Length: 155
Length: 261
Image (tube, rainbow over all chains, first blue to last red; front, side, top):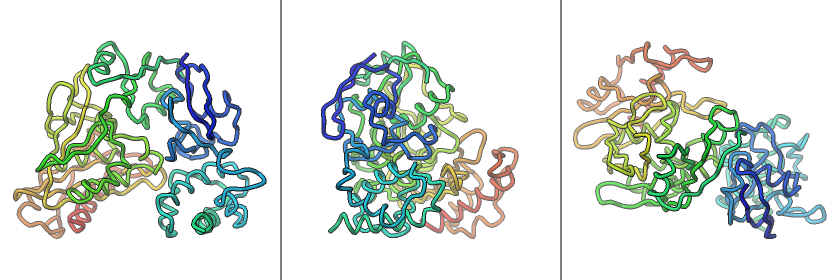
């Protein structure tokens, strides 16, 4: 067991966890924040993407102990049901989801993408979302959503 | 995932101490963690290198020295690398996906020597040097086979140096699903000699192609490769590409890399 101290969605948290605990298990099971999903468990689908010190990472592919001292932001930390983050609002308005399972990862990935590239082209978005898999939408509306989200984040 | 003990090394010496006792080094974890999750690896102790101070990119005059824990995103976005060896920055920016590039490191990639990884092609193609905890190893002596390197049991990579060359390019044919290189070719021209390093194709891992190097050293033009051949017996065959198709891709990717120089 090792004590992990991180800042999770702006709040300092700590817990003793077995050393082999994945960051996504720490978030979902230890901290009971279930907005971050586990889709494939083989580091491919991106449903588990969170921000680690502002950068997108797959939380199923790092140990919680490796996040010691870091700031972690999950889908719960970017907006609320009453006041959605602009990227969430854009996914809502552009029907950028069907079942919604991949959406937390898509949104977290897209926010970082737009942070680095405020005016992404279609190609930039498709390449930028290579680490996210969606089995419902065919991606077209996701690309539209990210473009709209980029616009709204810039406003 | 199997139970494991986590240790965060404070320095290279500290990490080597744990390594000598059987610890498994953890760099970015982009291969190790999935491998542990699939129970293909079950190290008793994982030794995190994040605190060893091995990240950073330096201009060393006629070469660029990149610390072992430097992430792909940092190489891709480095103005120094973009200016001195743009092909290397482009290669780093094309590895995996953004989340892999935000965690994965050059030292981890080079030490693992995955036969489909991109970085080994750059190290071998540029004729780089692998710096370790005990010595400097020339690229030509470093990669010894699929997932095998010249590293001793208690030796770890601390940095990799790449000479600044006149012209270089890397072109890969990515697997449409995994984005790993089905074939990737790094071509570098400098000092009147051309080096061609191929990844993704051979069951022995990354390799140089003497025939194409000689042809390109005499005439640095994609047309010089008309008629070039690759031994089909050495090629990987799997559901994604048969050996003869991979052999064809090796020549074709080399031509495209020459054209991109």
